[in-house]
Amino acid sequence: MSLQDTFRQAMRSYIYSVSVMSNIDSYGKHSAITVSSVTSVSLDPPSLLVCINKSAGIHETIQEGSSFCINLLTKNQEDISNLCSSFQTEGKRFNDQDWDLKNIPFLKSAQANIFCTVDKLIPYHTHTIVIGHVTDSFSNQEINTLTYVDGSYQ
Image (cartoon, rainbow, N blue to C red; front, side, top):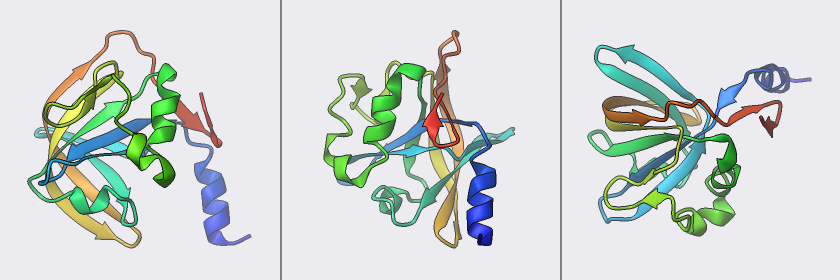
């Protein structure tokens, strides 16, 4: 087995929360992508990082100073995760009535919504590390977070 294969196998042991990153580009087009690599960076200032593959459709819409929302999904939002993870369903991502599309798109019934402004972009091989300065956040009191481990939702 190659190093990439053994690393992939090791990473399948991690339990990830499932989120959808959403934004709107300068032309008013909404974009969204399922992400599992969301990490808190700091509380002062409140910030997080998310890693985006450079081949993802949303990648080119992410610019320093632009805004986005991390929508932490609940266990009953697997369908939204699946829609936002496949290139073939890109045109259907915002058909769900749960999306608020007035400004930065966000899922009204998500476990949490974390609104950010892009503070820094760090290219790293196949991905870009996006550092987001948190501008607002909301969360539900009852924890019902969708997770992913070993190739399946939990």
